[in-house]
Length: 289
Length: 337
Image (cartoon, rainbow over all chains, first blue to last red; front, top):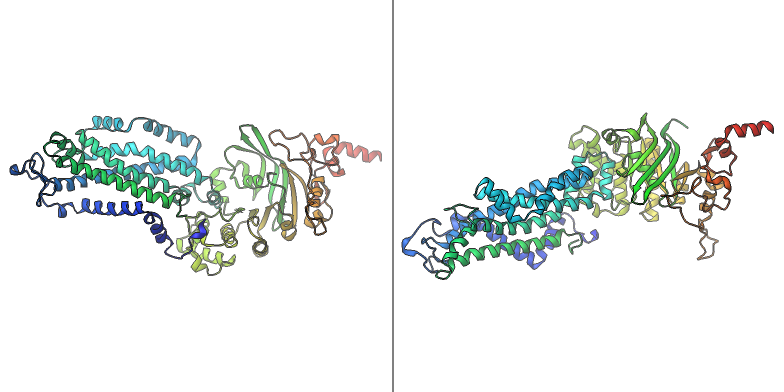
């Protein structure tokens, strides 16, 4: 099992390379994600035009060299808008998943490690949230708090937190029953440190995989919320609201619809590929071990 | 013999299961003297490990412990979790059976040793690290500086067990519980680890309770030995005495089952019958179902009694046990004679 890892100091790096990047899916996903993150981060440098600049002479103009993705119903450059929208959407996707991770993982660790009534008190409400349909919950939350980018991020985090808590709880149950945890207790280590140092690193793997895949879906949920007008508010471009705009002109100017749709599809795919790559690395039954 | 370090008084451990309560340890009383290596021997499931876990306060919530485990003036059975935690790894520590699983695979070995120190001593990381390095050297890890940051999988089984022992000794405990410390190791490494334990006892006067099912290990290292069967302690004596003159039928059968070189291949001697179901253990002596000398009286639990000052036995064949069960009757009989 572990004897396979023979090299010295660069063990960690070689695991990374041999694990995630050894599968073609993982490599492709990783490459696309790096590119997409770069696009989001450097949006102002990359976008050829102002995403909100209205040009009455270019209403629904088809793609050409200066505007490779064409223009929308207000004559705005679709490429620039997709790039800026991507920034918002990816921000919401990553931010919401991170938030869910930061809240859900400690809860799952704590519930799984202590078990008994602690487990019940933490997990029962989480199961209740999990039982509600995700979109319905998000829409309801936004109906209460009001629309906006940050709110949709929080709504997605609320949906995801229980999923991550569950995943971590189950891997924690396995890890907590290992002899090395018993040994740590036999050393007199306090529970808090056992959880942080010994349970967390050994139990977090599946949650990282899950979070990666969830990020792709978070982008979809964000798009859906914006599509319904519950996410990013105009004039902030978002992939979902762009889809909503494009729907009205689908037959005359399909490029307004197609490019934001493609952006969503590619991103979700990249997250899934990357998640698959991670799984081969982190799954105890995977080849990397 | 100097002071008593660990004293078990009528310890009972039961596990709640779906089928009922499993009586894993039944009325065990035992005293371990300072600086001695006490062997606890018995087959798998006889309650040796459960007894050690009860001493450490590490039994799962499904277990109930009765009786008293006295250690340094405390009864560990009734102790608060936090007080127990302070003792664990400091005054009492434990070596687990399988060094392959008792070290955190994702944690540098040196830090696992240092963690034991920082859990109990208010020292900075540098001091703890220096002490951990000294400990690693002491248990015979070559080049501890270079090994300190290694993950456990980079060490061999014997080396890992040395790390586990270093961890257990970090705070120079008064009592070391070694649960099958050599079972997962091959014979040459086994001898090295036993040597290590012996050396530690000599230098630090650590009291060691060695749990094993291997009579060879007992013969090599222990001063006294306690024999357990199905949760009952049936015989306690000096090692030489146990091997020379076992008194309890179970001990006798156990020793007779040891293969020797004259034996025909394929003719292992076994104890007929099976270990009783501990949800519904037989009343009285639990070995009665397999004992060649079983008699009516065996349905009553025989008390553990001093046959000689150094030799304790719980069996109705023994006059000592009869006397302990009925001091008045024995005295009357003695008076009549």
